[in-house]
Length: 524
Image (cartoon, rainbow, N blue to C red; front, side, top):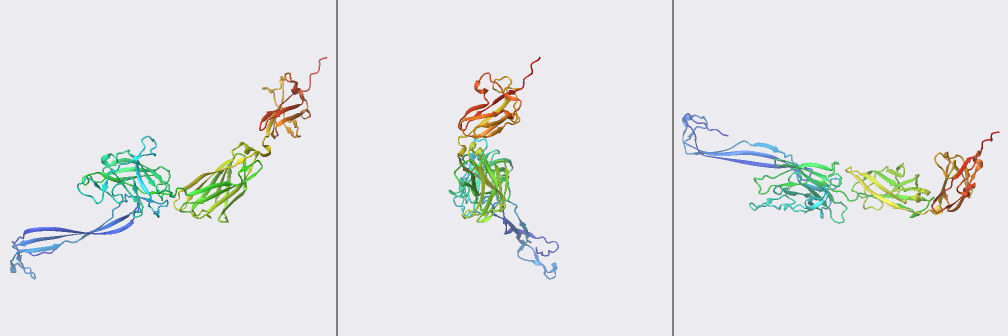
């Protein structure tokens, strides 16, 4: 500000006074925000100019500043500008707009056909995951026409449409506006946000439960939870997030509305595929079946930590040395562990992405032997595959892949089982009663020449016996000191042999009752 010297006794008289302020702003681009839009830093430069008219002001000698050479002049107009004040304003705001991105956080190559929809939660569903009716959103407009009662909208969903279709020009950005006057932001209100992919898309539909929380001034909190249990977005494994939205100023808007949106990732509907095949459709005991597991990576990134869990049918015996693995003609290391009928294959290499390459298939082959017990099972086994995406660490899974094998009994088609017991019959009724023990190491000869020995409890059994009339003979020489017990009720049981009729696939009992052969000497 310039100064003019005033003589003693003189005072300036301001006839008019005017201030003006000039604001200049420079926008500096910053790193993209979480939602994908760029945040900004603004550099402010501010200065003020002033002007006034002075009358009855003596004109002084500008060289000496002495009042002796001062005289009265006409009114003088004085102009000047203050110094500039500069500062930089960096708003620390997260872009409230939501954005749909790929499974690894990347922009999709084509957003055409995608749509977003906001539904009420089904009141009859206590879990809050089923869809009710579409939320009736208050219409908005851009640009805002003053006085028409329609609130100003926000791009890209300028008219607040529900559902809202995504476009490539918006790069997957979306937003919805909720009306406070309709109670749409009341605490406890629940919605379901749905991402709908195009028809015949490789992507799956995703649903998120949105629950409105507490309100603090013009801030309202909400919680978004992924209904499918998968992470909401890339970079973390969070299946639920809590955020806040800002309600617009009611003094400046005829309607009080707020933008509700958040970023979400969408993955392929099927990221990995497993197919199980066998080398035959039917088998019988004694056969060896070769199974093949075909695994394909359908994701947009390679898959690590591959494991395949295969549950074998009843009566199938796994052959560990038969396991082979290959990918595009090259051997792949496979580590095998077994727990009962469950076999786990761990793959030692990553599976590259190859959704469009027919040769990009991991093959695992192994063999299993069909035992006689298999005829009691269903011949149905299943396998599942688990893995982990290399780009974001998300888990991938497919299965169960099922193979059904029809079982034939073969040479043991109609075979049955003979079981029996050699015991001491104390009451001579031919049936074992409590207190009548079994006799171990007794030998029974079958009509086909088989020799069977009883166990410590006097029990024996013969499996896979051809049906029909079968005969067994007790070898008394194998149990010295014992002889056949007389049967007081059935005369045919007083024989050393037994004749039974074995039905196809049946079971029959063949018991032998014995008694000690010694007697007390008569008293003289």
